[in-house]
Length: 118
Image (cartoon, rainbow, N blue to C red; front, top):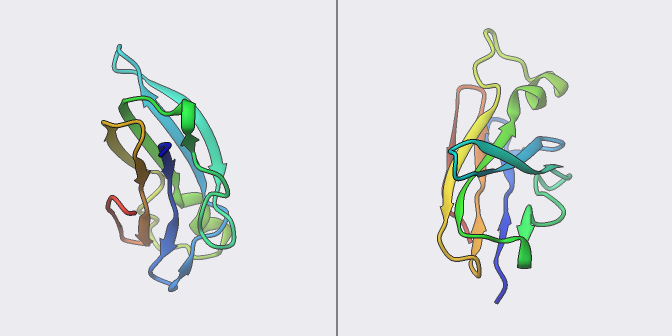
C-alpha cells in the first residue's frame, strides 16, 4: 500500500462542496521553517483532483495544509460583515509514509472543523 495525502472542502453554510479553493501543502524543514511543496485547487466536488502527495513523494514529518477560504468567500459573494476567516492552516504529522492521510475541512463564515478522514 502506498501512502498519500488527500483533502476536500465542504461549505456547511451552503451544504455544498467548496469549489475552486486554493490549497497549499507545506513541509516543516529541520530548521522549523515551512517549505512549500505543492499548490492545487478544489474541483466541483470540493476535492483536489490528484493527491497532494503520493508514493515516493511521501516522507515522515510535519506538514501543513493552508486553505485559502477568504478568497473562496469573496469569489462566491458569500462575504460576511466583517470577514473573519482568510487562510485556515491545518498542521499534522505523517508518521508512516505508507498510510493514507485524508485531511478534510468543513467551513462556515464564522469557523471551521477538521479531522483525520479515511
